[in-house]
Length: 397
Image (cartoon, rainbow, N blue to C red; front, side, top):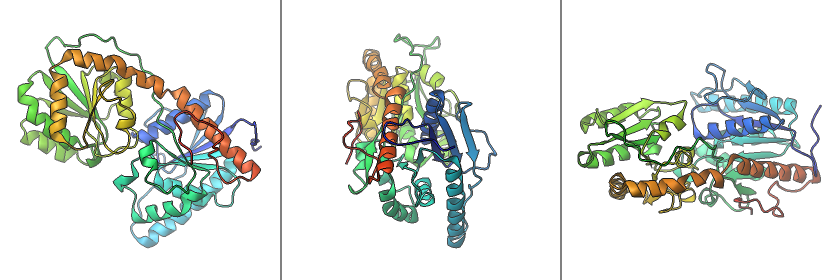
């Protein structure tokens, strides 16, 4: 039987949609949302486009119903792209109608457009979310065009930062909700010199141009000779691995820069590090930066247009440097590498990020937004971002 929405009703059943549960930031947030709501006893159905050839990278609560729709695959022509899109819309629409949810939440531009097409004419509130800085231009021309046309149909469009929200026209109903930060076991704030006297700088993310690891390696190579006790580890996988390996070899840093691959336990790697650096050219709301701070690490980040500046309180719990400014990054790294007192001071405040963006706080914002959307649909209103509600940390038009 369908669940009952309406004023005062709880969200009993929700459908979440994402392309796949791979090792990415958006995927981690959606898994956190699904698990949190399942733990609360809500019915959670997670639709992904993959065929089930690999298990989800992030563990899902036993109460989460994960249904793989078998819609993944690249198109080889404009015609096949059109046919595939029609098929995806048809399958999505049937799956969503069968699930009879109180609300649908989807992540990522291309998936968002398909979900909005699939739910056209249905009375189910749909909330879509952008998960990367739209200025980066990752979405193709067709997706950008469809996004402009169909985002106005959404009950609400959720952004991770006010900077990302500013990219879109003001005639869409919108909210800003940061990513939730799980609380790890915080390490003791003590000197972390290892028995061999070595120290570790850690970076994490997909080995793609976006993450700027080429910039980080270039900066580290320029200062490494002055700091023989420091090494660099970059965790992740991606299409730039070969180029990064070649860059490391060219700099003669094979013994001091490691690319260990993907880790399923990032907390453990962060907690044994001495410094974290985010070298991204652009971001959404970088989970790994929050996780590093929650682990009590001093952090340095490029102040790219969206994300780090809304997480780091510059000089209080971390250091921001101008975007893609290698010289500024080198100076900031050397300052912290040579000043343990400063590292300890920043690390002492860094874990407060887990309070500012706690899972409970952020998930309550998502829940209240879903309730707004349900009430609006029930009463025939135009959208789901009810300005009468003052969501902490959320911007409304």
